[in-house]
Image (cartoon, rainbow, N blue to C red; front, side):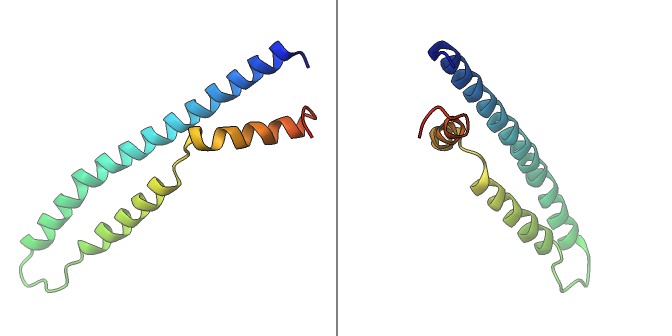
Length: 97
């Protein structure tokens, strides 16, 4: 593989990784917006119900909220993982030892 071909490949690989990261972040933001809209509505409904001693609105709050936190922690971070992935790809292609 020519050096210019390798550079083109690396640039294309970086662009694909960045696009993937952007898509994941957009999905997360949409889910977060829904969370911010729906959870307060559920909390209001819960507290408007008379005679309800069990606050069921806490279940989706903590369930969905913990899922969002876990998702945030595992969101791909291209700048940190890209050099590692590039080295692995180069090894698989037989470009380095």
